[in-house]
Image 1 (spheres, rainbow, N blue to C red):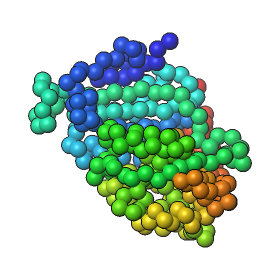
Image 2: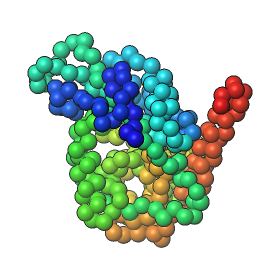
Image 3: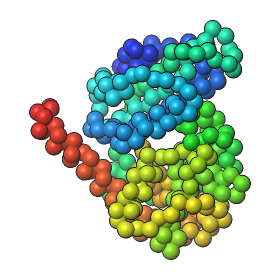
Length: 295
């Protein structure tokens, strides 16, 4: 059975969804996107994802007038499953000719589909093996704060990592770490957590912001600052974060172990806080359903 997707006002089977070849998202990557996990129908940091989407839309000058929450609700209902991620893409639209210049008042093209996922950090944390990574030169464009669809540099970075037997690429620009190919980055030194500053070379991750909140609430010191690549060699712990993976320990970088080469104690504490947040989110939703009589 084909999954049902949303495309420009219609819900259709995926194999029937067709995008015009003159769509600017197809021709130029003139589009932005979001990936939002839904656990038992509850959007993980939904408002923060939508705020980041609006930031990207505003930055590239695309106006979208659409009830996205209602769209997501319909899409998830048409593709049943306990935990799903929704991919949403908005391009500038279709023009009759391939030209860098675009006309005013174009109708954006909107595409969304959902796919099954597991809850981030589901199960026993002592079974988490950790992630291996390599450093790769950050060759992306200068506006990485916009969640745009032009991800060729990310694709090539992950290809380089895989060719070296690693699972993630940590990106380096002029000697400083920015983020991973598909995640944000944290370092631990002597019990203090550090993460790169948010600027135009870094995407503001929704899980990154959640971890900053959890660290502050737990009284764990965390500083946002430029982080030189060589600090990876002396770090006590290295973590990566994303909405679909939660927060994961990096146990090896460039073939060398991070500290003892196993997930560290501060990661375990933060991962427990993350799990608690997820469970509280689900319990809150179940309570709301009971109060409203939702099945």
